Image (cartoon, rainbow, N blue to C red):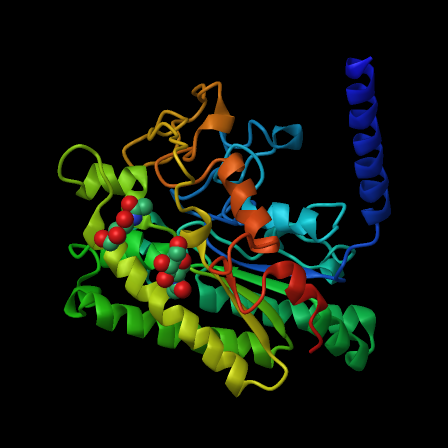
Length: 358
Ligand SMILES: *[C@@H]1O[C@H](CO)[C@@H](O)[C@H](O)[C@H]1NC(C)=O
Ligand SMILES: *[C@@H]1O[C@H](CO)[C@@H](O)[C@H](O)[C@H]1NC(C)=O
């Protein structure tokens, strides 16, 4: 009897979830979502670029619907999940392949190995660095304005969208941390380099605002010094996090948050918010995940093509040497959408960013 009533509860709960899912279909909470960033959000833009930084082969995508590859993880990225939480019934398409019918609900400009600085990641090949992503956005707005044939309507539409920006890791991993290849960065101290990045990031975000964006969630950097490939390359002994690299990242994050506050002050009607990835991914009481990549990695830290990944992907934080698994992306997306601690997002989590008036 007790069993029966538990079963009943489960069915009722599932029923409610189904109703909510049903209501959400075709009725997203905002009309559009635009995504800027690097491999943490790239959903296939690099597939046809001349670069080593692409994920268009198995075992990437093994847990993605239909086994689609092109994302640097086993399943969905943080951007895919935020799109879902916002109520979009389809995935936001990569800019590279988005059709006229798709662009009014937003596109994803993300590109693996791209940085805030143009040259970051260049030793890996071509990439859509942030300035190029914003140029693509400008061209897309022209395309959308022509399609909608009503500039006032398009302008209003763009103001209602949510914009995500998740970039900066490659300015460290594929620039500042490789002085042999990027000597000009080596002339800066960590603090000067962070200041330079924040100055350039602020300019790009201001351009985005000038192109009509108002609600913009900006992700800080994770503890890159703990990425498995970074530990392998720079770590000393015992495989623990590289504190010096974490320090650099913390300086960047520490400068990014006040820069976001300043943008909110300076740009009328803007609603920028800072997402604290370090806070969200801080180890939770006692839960230890194995500190090894889920897939077998090649020397550059990406998965070796056509190898079998680990079977328990729900128990790994890293899919390859750099990139989170779908389960880690789920935590990131869920807590940036609905914050659990007042450190997670400031001044708003994404669910409140949706509601706030311009
Ligand atoms: C990263 O480095 C910082 C500063 O050295 C340290 O305090 C922190 O514990 C490190 N992060 C992790 C997750 O170990
Ligand atoms: C992010 O959250 C951590 C708490 O986990 C905090 O120590 C850090 O100062 C926060 N970073 C910023 C830039 O607010």
